[in-house]
Structures are given as structure tokens and as C-alpha cells.
Image (tube, rainbow, N blue to C red; front, top):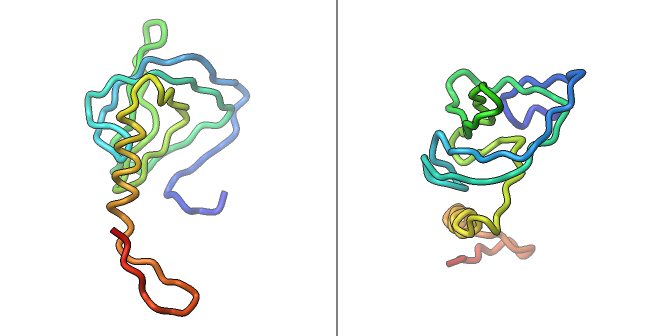
Length: 116
């Protein structure tokens, strides 16, 4: 919508929805590669991530193996709405990544304030 991510998106006629048991195909700010998560997918759009970005998840629906989302740097983009209570490490890892990314904050006075 605003070109914040290098992704092409388009509306589709089909609603994609359902509960998923997914495996992380790459490490991200949310999970380590190989982590099993549970979540829900609900969307009517399709996205084409950058060719260089590894997928975020893989799961099986009927006889198909689906790869979904992508990971690029500190970005984890996905339609999978995760059930964080099923894996509390997701929240811990996300907060740790956020804390690591904050090194300095500017206040209105313009003076730097150390965070840590």
C-alpha cells in the first residue's frame, strides 16, 4: 500500500483461511528455524515477496506443501496469525529483538537519552 516492504500484492477471488501447524523455514525476530507454531490464516490477497528473501513458514494442506511469508533482515512478514500462548518464546524473542534495536532515544530537548 505504501511501498514500505518490497512486495507485490493483489486481491484474489478466493478467501484463504484455516488453522495451521507451521514450521519456521528461517530464523527471524519471532522464532528460530525449525520452530513449530500454531496459528490462523485469513486473507483474500496474494503477495509476491522478493526473490532473495527466504520464506517464513511451511505447512501442509491436504496433499500440498505451502510456503508462506518471508523474512528479510529484522522483518518477518506473514499472513499467519500466531497463537503466542501456544509458544511463549515468540513473545520473549520479539521483546528481546525490540530491546536490542533500541540504543538511543531523542527527547524533545534534543538531548540523547541512553536506554538499557
